[in-house]
Image (tube, rainbow, N blue to C red; front, side, top):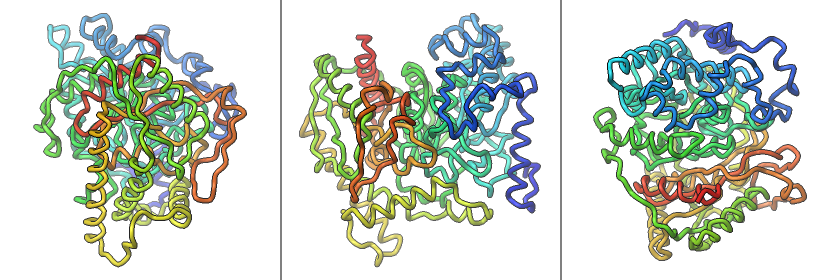
Length: 559
């Protein structure tokens, strides 16, 4: 156990934990007392664009060299400079540690910090290089990790009061692999209570804000990662995804986020608040970054590290070198009438389709009936509801549920009352009976998609990443277009593309009784990042990544 007295009221335990975390930020890295007076306060209620206003740079905490390290290098360039000695791991780690500390004070994106331990690790790696050796392909690279990964000597509370004071005694397998590959683990990042909402808020660490607009959420459940990377406080972050938890922060914060096939990246040995052994839709660990080359480096390094030697839940498939065809057959997933798209999302998808068609790619519109988006989500929600352990953890600690968790419940209840169910009444079945029925339905859906893929001879599909961009705190609710891919277990990636802007100003958005979506308010959302989502079939992760790079180059106009 840690230093937090388990017998104290939860509010006091939380206050102690927050103070311990705050004290770990060196005094020289603290923002000046009046620095936040430069912004509209309170930050969480006002539109502050911390990226456009260069809030980190203007804080004066980073040197010019540290700003160059964190702003001017891609991951590949950083690794090259670390390998040839142009940069040392100590100076790169210090730069990212300071930037992460500033980001934390601006948007509350961190949970645990390991700055001193990271400095010692970086010095060890520099000494190793001085002897002519590199630890591995990630030698000297700072990597941030979501709070649910165990890092020995720190806590993995996942924002749950019931886990306060429990210090991790060993690393999660993926952490051990990252260290073996030469990475420097220096921070852990914030999540929502239960990790089952898209709003990174909890009673232990508080709410994470979106750097593009602090009145909006950063997404979840890997929202701390999304916010940190958007502020360039990390070159490469690792989150987890069971319904969109890597891709939603990516779309909200304007980064890339890749959800691999289940069991490709080690996901065992993690802090969870679910019932042990009740793994139905598998959570996947996946990277977030500001460049796709970094994501490729991550996958290639992990896949080739024989991860099954560290984690028995992993499929031991080495990295496969593949290339994309020059002309792709791209399926276009339609908008579901039940889950209508906000005007900027609809516009961006149409624009992306136009660009890709102009580059010669073949676009195949898919039918709403064959995509069965409502049914996929209904099956997924029913599977998730089979395990109530997370709510038990909340009750056991006496803490209240966060607002976004309450809101999700209300939205799902509304849908149950207004949308005709695709499933029969399952109330007469026991839990095993429900699971068997739902697994049968899921298998049928996967077969439907297999046939659709073959019938249209598809290479890859484009879909909305969500109905919306980042939205007001607590309002994201459900995630129908990302949960779709978790249910199918298809690798998928969010590609940043465009922003909410003038073309969306006059657009109207009204919901019918049998529809659901977060509120649309152009004035509040203006400037928020937009994106598209791409996906292909199970275990074709390498193909998905190469085609993602190809599509990204088309959208950027670099081909």
